[in-house]
Every structure is written in C-alpha cells, then in structure tokens.
Amino acid sequence: MAYTYGEQGRQGSARRVRGTDVPGAREASRPPRWELQYGLTNLASHRRTAESHFLHRARAQADRVIERRHDLRGAWFFPYPFDFKHQVHTGLTYKAPWYSGMAQGEALSLFSQLAGYAGVPAAHRARYRAAADGAFASLLLANEGDRRPWVVARDGQHQLWIHEYPIDKPGTSDYTYNGFMFAVLGLWDYYALSRNSLAEQLFDGALTTLDAYFPQLRNPGWLSNYCHTHAIPTDTYHSVHIDLLRQLSWLSGSDRFAVQSDMLTDDYPPPSLGKAGGLATLDDGTHTLFRFAENGAVTASRALTLSRPWQCTASRRARIQGRGIYLLIEDGPAAGWQVAERFPAVRLHGEWCGSDYRPARAVTFSAGVSVVCRKHPEEGTVTRTVTYPKATVVSYDRRAVIDSRKMVRLTREEVAGWWAPTDQLH
Image (cartoon, rainbow, N blue to C red; front, side, top):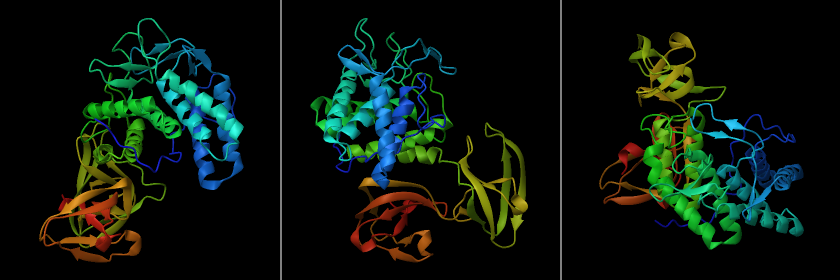
C-alpha cells in the first residue's frame, strides 16, 4: 500500500534516552545509539529554546559518531565497539565490532536534521549531508550471500525489515519492533531533506511491514511484544511503541497507525500518575477492593460500603493482567487497595493518556441521537447536548481519558473545543 506524507514533519520528536547516557561522556565503549539519541534530544531542545548549548551538544554527538565510522561496502556504518550477548533473547551474540539497524537509522535522523537546520553554518550542513548520504547508503545493502555488514533484509513474506539485531542466517534475527520504527524515522528525515525516491520507497515499504505485523506486535488487553521472534511482552517498550506509532501516523498521514497506537494505549495505558497522583471519586454504594499478585491473581479482597461519595488520592492507574483498569488508592479506608475503574461509579478526575492526531480524524454522530458533550476539566463541568437530525461526520484532533471516560476533542466549527464520549459515537 502507498502512504502519503504529512507536511508538518517531526520537528525533532522526543527520543527515549537511556539513563546511563551521561552528557559529554566520551567512553569509546559507548553504543552509538546513545550518543545519537542524546544528540537528537538536544537538537529538539534547541528548536524549543534557541539556547546555543543544545545545538553545540547535538553537533558534538554527531561529530563523534562520524569520526568513529567504518567505511564498508560503499556506506558508512557506526560500530558497537564491545562484545554483546542478549540475556533474554536467545541467539543474539555478537563480537565487536558489530552494527545495528537502529543506530544506522538514528544516525540518518541526526545527520539529516542537522544538514537541513538553519542554525548550522552552511559549510557544516554540507558535511552533515555527506554523513546522511553515507548512512542512507547502508540501508540499501541487503543480506545477500556472504557480503557483510548489513542491517536490511526481507523476511519469508518478502516484507522489508531494518534489523536492530541482524543475524546472518536468514530468519534468525530478532525482528525488534522499536528498533525498526526508530530506523524508519531516519528514512523520513532523510526523505524530508533529500526527496530521494529510494528513501520514499523504503519508508513506504517499512510502513507496510509494520502494518502487516501489528497483530503479532499486539497482545490484546496486555503489553505488546518487544520483538517478533521471541514474542516477549515488555513494559519497558510498550509505551515506546505507542509513541512511535503515533509519530508514524503524523508523518504518513495514515490513521491506521493512530488507531494502532490507541489500541496499545487501551491494552495497557501508562500506569504512572506522577508524584502527586490523581484525585479519584468513589460514589456511594458498595465497592470491592483487591490486592493482586504480579500475574494478576487475587491475593486478597474486601468490600467497602460508602454512604456518600468519597474523594481520595490514586497513585496508579494500570491494567491488571487478565483484568480491567484498576486504581491504587493511597489514603483513607481503602489505602493500599485497588479498585476497578468504572465510569461513573469509580472515576479518576482530570485528563490522562492523551493523544494528538495530525491530521484530524473523524467520527459519526448518529441521526437523532443526543450526545452530552463537555468542556475540558480545567474549564469546569460545563456541558451541552449535541443532536444532529441526520448522521453527521465530525472531525476531532485529540483523544484522552477524562474523568475515567474515553473522549475526543471535536474540531467541527459549531462544536469546536468540546469533548464527546467515544461510546456514543461511531
């Protein structure tokens, strides 16, 4: 399938940076992707603040990676300078130097963004363009015969993959989802810089692969898998998958990836509510409180009967394995217990798990059905009833959980800025 490309670009989208990535460190054993991620983060910070030290840091990371490159097969490869054996995923054992498609793609991102960035002097932009060209060349080299290194291959279904952990024997690589998606962002950045038709085709092919493999990535009602080969759910990378799919929806203009991002969010929403937690209300009546083992088994339960609505602090909102969304209560008679989120009887106030859509998406108001819409929680509890005499398509640009109910922010002129509950829309 062919995807169209959004015009807004990524503008240095946030990257996940390991906590061990100390700014300014120069250890030769550092994986290049850490430096590249740190460089991308600083470049994004410079776009937001215009503070010169951020651009200096971004360029320093790029320059360091360029200096350590290996010129192989007519392309630039960025070596991992240490032996590595994955402790969980069998079959991933490497002797230094080795090369990762994730690092190749992130190098392509950083070099391409710097090459097109007005804050970089023209002479240096030319240098980064040459680096981007060298990095892109590595993504044109497949695993053919005994020629090495390579990070790009087709699987048994003839789908394109960029491998974070390439293995020479066909079909034995890890098929890691997040590393692939990070590399795909590099293809977008290079295409935005160069309008190279091969980059366009690779971007399109990579999106086709991700779309085809989404059912294998996803575990309905639970965490997504880290990779295709081992199919191990991971809480560390589930939120990364959500963010990356959202970015790909922005770039491609296809809402398929927005839908997929939303599905993963509903399967396992980010569990943290921050240090302050969130205000929750339990309505009057009887509620069942639980304690769970790590696998979702109930270890204790009891009833809590309230004669009137009770407000409390929730420190966590999370999916329990094999069950629904539960709030962990921090104070009062339910302190240390979890209660199932049930709108409107058990609700967490405010907006959570928000997702923006670029371009806007669309829902349908059924003919003659009255939908009670509301303003954002920060604007109070103002509501209005919206009824269309015939089925009407209305656009929206954001989805979130508001007061424990999934809602979308409408953009159609007469209802712009109002939030409508998704369970009343199609």
